[in-house]
Length: 90
Image 1 (cartoon, one colour):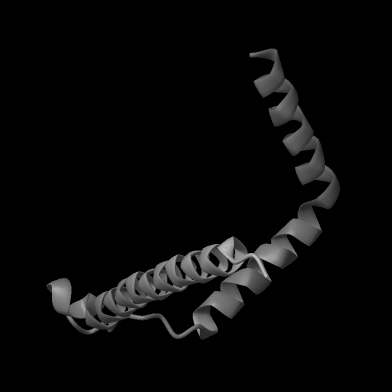
Image 2 (spheres, rainbow, N blue to C red):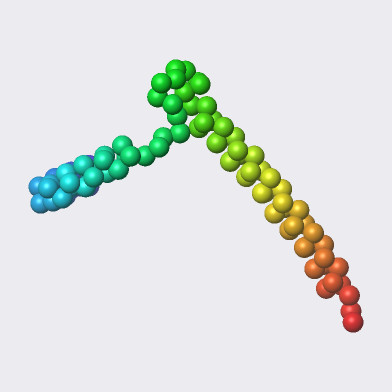
């Protein structure tokens, strides 16, 4: 409890000391976020509104699974090749 009070006091002190800078920062962040292209259509309703977001998520998920499969196959083959080569006594 004392730690929470101390943290709140520290945040309050920072707010008083740096209020103008914090307000400027938050205003700039808000302005930049308004310029962003968000992955949904504001005119659409329901699930159709998020079609681009859903499609992108599916692409990322499939790509991740395929990449994991390629890395697993490469690891399996390299372990076999290195194992075979190191068992040879030249």
